Image (cartoon, rainbow over all chains, first blue to last red; front, side, top):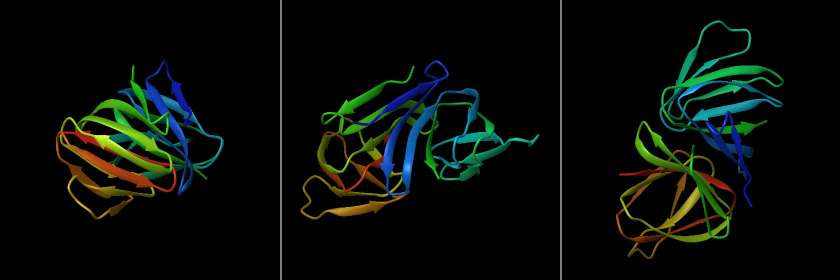
Length: 93
Length: 93
């Protein structure tokens, strides 16, 4: 009943759901660097460890830690890197 | 590369990982009531919404909300219920 998705040869796996906060996924990223595209505003929250992010148009990376969130605009690409398996929550707005 | 598991006819789905906090899963439970068994101490954290828990030997249920955690002993059974798709993190100690 839950749909799972794999990206980047299975280095990122997520599970979709209808949470109390709306349409969402929880997932895990393996150590690596990834570029994601958005089709809605996304609010991403680190669940354990940390994710380092480069927002579209920015030159600097910024690191977010356990329970910290960042917002990514609609219809953009952004970069994420991490150094260990890192679980995250993504809310689609 | 990540292993996903399904329980209770797919009403609970999880993804295993080696997080910075150790061996862990992130998962989602559909609305319902479940009994889980532990084979190690487990630290469970609600990621969104809430989970209502009955610890082994207890008669009362207790509710945990977003980012709240509870610990379950090794080799016991405990009950969990929720009223909407609820994402969680489980750390195995």
